[in-house]
Image 1 (spheres, protein in one colour):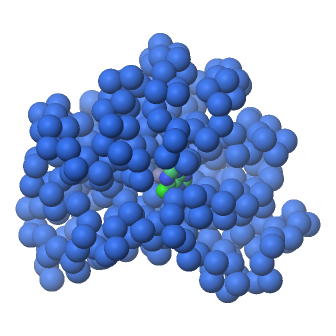
Image 2 (image 1 turned 60 degrees about the vertical axis):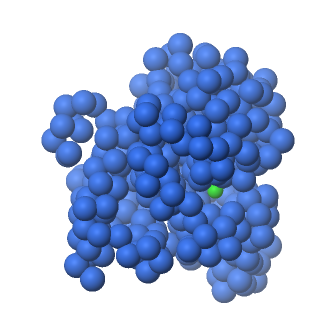
Length: 326
Ligand code: ES4
Ligand code: ZN
């Protein structure tokens, strides 16, 4: 399939990947050993066998448990390098990476330890593979707005190293409206903001993210297809959706790839991008997502070129950088 070959080998940007979600079982056990701690699983195979999710929450419970092996700046650096190596192999030349500081500071890991390690990994990854990486600080929506505001205060001395803010974790019952003050502050700092919305939550959460949080793009947004007026608005305003197909299958947002709304979103003219989300947990990295999408949808070369172009246009890189890419 020449269109698939093109899609796999084209230069691409990834805009939706959680660094904690790139923790492969092998590295999780290596870090546990290095830090003298034990995971509640006998071995890598037992851990991998637990990756059998029936909802976002069932995944998050395991994802937060595994993050406990991340203790030192070296751990965060090694995690970042392992992801960047895989990303470069998939012809990703630019990646905007989420990190969840509250998952770590709540365990007593200093904010600066997390950031120093991730930064070191980005620097080494750029030198080794020529890949450019940005960091997006994500707030955990199952926690309070006060907790997020305290995290923002911790982040403020490091703003030069933070390229945007996002919102993730348990969506249902934690609407964007819960974080209006927080996001107003983030925007006042001059940084772009994004939010997970319309993954498990209703289309109204996408509308709230746009109207109440002022987001520049929507993470997931796949339930926009349920609201024709919203679809038209996203298309008219050029709002990008960072769609993560294997994630959606693994978390049972859709029963199979044929039921995924990706085709409807593209047909409506929405600026769709493809991404891996939590590749260690969901069955693969970006090119694995591309293979799975192509097996179900058989897109032509022009569609794959459009998806790659969208990934650069929707990125937060400078205009000059984007001009060189698209
Ligand atoms: C996430 Cl797939 C997904 N959704 C919401 N929050 C998350 N954090 C990490 N992966
Ligand atoms: Zn995500």
